[in-house]
Image (cartoon, rainbow, N blue to C red; front, side, top):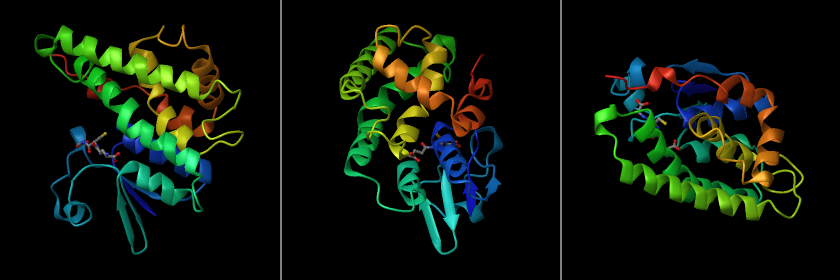
Length: 202
Ligand SMILES: N[C@@H](CCC(=O)N[C@@H](CS)C(=O)NCC(=O)O)C(=O)O
C-alpha cells in the first residue's frame, strides 16, 4: 500500500493509526501543507480534490479519510461504528476544525472572538452528545470492541485537549474513553504529536 499525506494532518493521522492497528506494511509519501506536491501530476492523477490522505492498494485508490478507514477495517464496519464515524464528520470535526483554524492556523489579527465562541459552543454540544452516547458503560464507541469509529473521532482529541486542557473536566465518560484509546500504540505514535509545523505566527 502507499499512503500519501503529511503526518501533521489529522485526517492522515487517522489512516496512520489504522495502519498501525492492522500492522500493515506501507510506503509513506509526504504530500501537502509545507511539503507541497498537491498539484504534482502523480498526485492529481490519484485524487480530484488534491487533498490528503490518499491510499493506494493495487488497483484501488481512495481519498476521504473515513472511506479509507472503512477499507482498512477489511470487513464490515458495524452500523454503530459507521454511525459514530458519520457523527465525527458532520458534527464533531467541523467545530474542532473551526477552532483549530482560529487558534493555530490564523494570524492573531485575523482571529475573531465571536467565531471562536461559536465553534467552542458547537464543540461542547458535540462532546455532550458523545458523553451521553457512551454513558451506557461501553468501553468503545461501538461497544466492547475497539473500532474505526474510535480512530475517526479519537484522532481529534490530542489537539482538542492541547488547545483546551480542561475541556473534559465536565465530561468524565468521554475522559475515560479517551484515556482508554490514548494508550494505544497508533495514537501515541501518530496522534499525540506536535502540531507546531502548522502554526501561523506572523
Ligand atoms: N474530508 C477529507 C478532508 C481532507 C482534507 O481536508 N485534508 C487536508 C489536511 S487535514 C488537506 O489536504 N489540506 C491541504 C494540504 O494539506 O496541503 C478527509 O477526511 O480525508
